[in-house]
Image 1 (cartoon, rainbow, N blue to C red):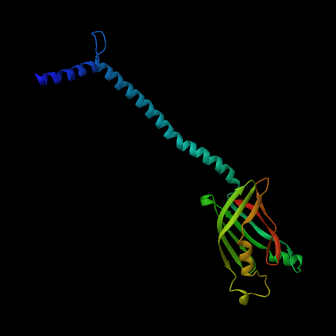
Image 2: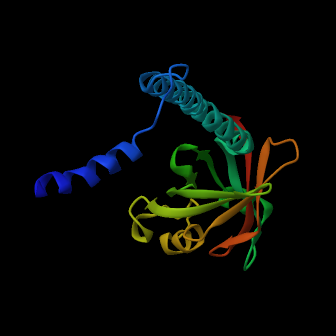
Image 3: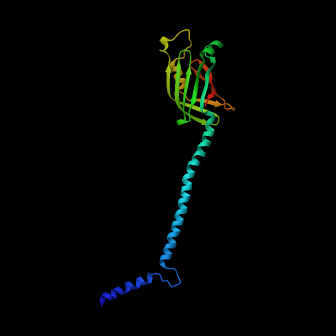
Length: 209
């Protein structure tokens, strides 16, 4: 008898918590079915939206990349030119200035924003590699590695040919080089710099992409 008294309140609680349905109302199973179907519809819509977003991401990345590349494109490629000497400190003729000039090229790569530069004189070759940055119509070449081939150094130089000391070349090309792009985007002109006793500017013309 005591055990039955304990079970009755529990049964009453269970009865109060159960929903009541009349004959005209949908069955509990139909409610569950509607909820299930609604969940499936919601899940399906969400999945479609997520799929569209995922598919759109590469397109957006390409568009952003295109805009960036559009700004970079004029600077990329190979530029051929020279270091044109306009003055020799201590004196020199026009012929001397022409012979002291260095000829070479700059290759600007999009990959890792890197560049390669080579300048060659009568008795030396200067190879430079590094990274670049762009601001407006200017590109700044920041050297990372410089290799100078001076054909044996001062002791082995030909006195009848022009010669730039390795230390002077290292000091000049060890600093960032700033080049300005022309309005027609076909040439670069550098700022006035000194290489030892030589004063001049770098000038390059677009050779190829």
